[in-house]
Length: 453
Figure 1 (spheres, helix red, strand yellow):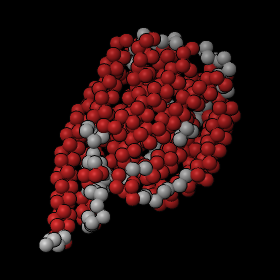
Figure 2 (tube, one colour):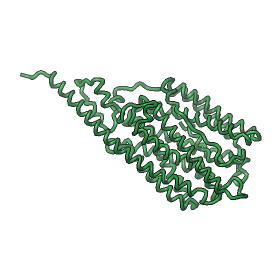
Figure 3 (tube, helix red, strand yellow):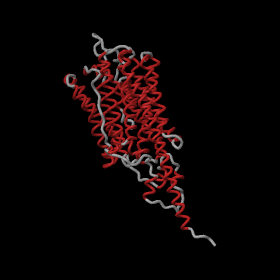
Figure 4 (tube, one colour):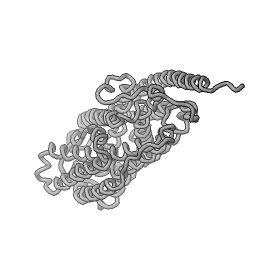
């Protein structure tokens, strides 16, 4: 997992990338598609092998493009395709790790475990951004970024990714669920309440279906796209993920606009570090509170913080303390969303179709990122003054972008509140069905016990 997020270290080498190929702000985005179906069919090891092939090939193609930069400077479509391949490889490797984790651990531990695993995903951006800043910038960060060692960085990524995926092929494995895992896989209803620990109680398949781990029902594939509850999550991920990734991908441009490029290495690392720590914290806290409040409540908290920070950035982004705070808040908010969302998807809709369902969520985040990035780039390009080349200077380059992200963040808050209400209603119905199952079982036991004379 620690090599799956290299894509999000893009802001660390974005200035060198743009100047090497003479690209503008709008070029270099990608979108991901579900690989969960492949995982469900072939398992984690074949998925890791596919990740090795696609992911490493993407970076090798990007390495080749630097060697032939004279040609690729006039062919940005090819560079976009190579970046797209890297994105798909990143997604495949990530899904191989995440889906193995989701399937191997019971729901009562899932938030914590996903938090730790996802933290490594978030940390990978900080790790590779730090490696790039320390070993490949070579002091060229003051208008001569094209002299940075991009080709060396891309080649290193290809090699490290190949080695890590080879290890995954050998060690990733799906474990069969044991009795404790099956008993623990209940959502927001204590295991003891749902499955009384009595050898005399026998549950029918209908009974087990009524108390399975899917709060809103085992739904997947294309039908889930018309499910209202899933649509709430889909658009929450679209907004929260889109806002977070767009900022993370453009930190270097923002710093350059305020003539703070010397801090690019620090802030490019700060955001993923905050994201990493928030994933662990959100997963741990949500597991401890899950029997009292839905995980969506914690999600709501971070969306509120995100919205407030977007409004502040509209007016004060040029102040260095605000830039630091914004990097921390966006990193933490994005990390919490990225940790809680997969746990919630498995909790609300079950693990049977998790590959499909989480794949759709990743598509949602990717679409949001593309849309926000295009708007960001259009506004940025619009405010570039003649003579400034490819760089836009000042707060005017970002004010309208942050207004858009602030308003959409408020909309995500409204969606989350509605989702919390629907989850609470579903839990009430689930508890009612559970009580009915237990009552019928107790009646059956009483009938089978002969009176003692």
